[in-house]
Amino acid sequence: MIDTEDHPLLQAEALTKRYGAQIGCRDISFELYPGEVMAVVGESGSGKTTLLQLLSAQLAPSAGHVSYRMRDGVMRDLASLGEAERRFLFRTDWGYVHQEPALGLRMAVSGGANVGERLMAVGWRHYGRIRDAAKDWFDRVEIACDRIDDTPTAYSGGMRQRLQIARNLVTNPRLVFMDEPTGGLDVSVQARLLDLIRGLVAELGLAAVIVTHDLAVARMLSDRIIVMKDGAAIESGLTDQVLDDPREPYTQLLVSSILPA
Amino acid sequence: MYALDLVNVKKSFTLHLQGGLHLPVVAGVNFAVQPGECVALTGPSGCGKSSILKMIFGGYRCDGGRILIRDGERIVDIARASPRTIMVIRQRAMSYVSQFLRAVPRVAAIDVVAQTLDHAAPDHARASATVLLRRLNIPERLMAVPPATFSGGEQQRVNIARGFLPDRPVLLLDEPTASLDSDNRAVVVDLIAEKKRRGVAVVAIIHDKDIRDAVADHIVDVASLAAA
Image (tube, rainbow over all chains, first blue to last red; front, side, top):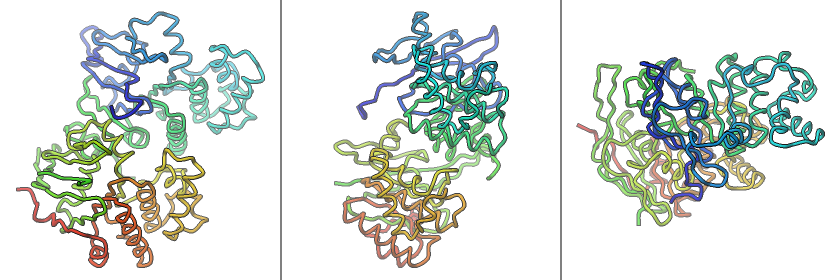
């Protein structure tokens, strides 16, 4: 025992996904603890997104298990959860930030409603309180409150991504999945978003699994890294171990390909 | 009772992009540091001094031997510890002042420093950070500014404050005074002396001989530990 919180929140055991004869990912095992941020890095097609979808119960594994510690402290295999329990995870205990904000937002309703909707899904009914909570989150993700009644179609890419983050975090999740959260954004917008994510993750003590091909994103946000290639986890360790002292040929290639700032 | 003990520590790199070139760095590194003691690592550039510090901190992986650090009642071998254990040890038992500050965009200098006291109340942490930054002659008007635009010497002083603010049993210093003027060097010498008086075990790389003589109790010549 090293810590009072020394029980994993999420556990992957020998996780494998086949698409017919193709391998999506194979034999991946790790544990994620409360408050830990893990980055999954690798090039396109390495299986990063497949892994994220397996971990978040959007795909069923061909072999292996994903377990999650529910709020009552009991570790449960995701495959064994009932529909109500799965819904609880998706609506409250988890967040999922897509690379493309339109996938995670409802583009036809206002920004404020996008945030408020998650609260209504967990039983909030008082309009004034929901609006106040939405305003508070607009503030935290640095969107001007006078944009609260606009639909996200009228937002810039960076604002949409920040709104998606607010929508995910408003229910106080314990675990957030992020798929290339800064992927489609300009460099200056990226830096601001990264910084915002870094601050919120630390402040809220969130655990996160962040898929990215950008090692600078991994460096800035994560405690640990898993490097994927051809569906396998070829190297893992503390972020500075993997980036400053990479062992595998492929990881050395990735690290040496970063342009100096 | 040592705070830190290195036993037969070994490090090499294999550069796969250079046809698997094998680069031995150090081997047979043996030294212990008692609480309140400062060990200085000496030797020419490239002989492996920083590699030893990074192995102790767990940022470089260790190829052989043991790196034992005391954490309260237990002893942890960093060379074999899981990432999770190293994270806990870093929070509780080790501080590291790197050669360069890795600047975080948009975070004020005072918060870069105060964040290292993650269990303290924010006001208290900021007050302590202010005192230390003042001692290191960082002007008040700069404390609220992210350090990315600071001069090299100012960034290094923020980095020093960040490493010195938490009181952890082991302090690792990689060239803390290299880019500082003589006034600020004197401040750092005082700060190291204070840490030693409080029982902190210090491992330092310091090129300046006068400063080294002022703070070090023992010298480990890393050049003599070159791996074959």
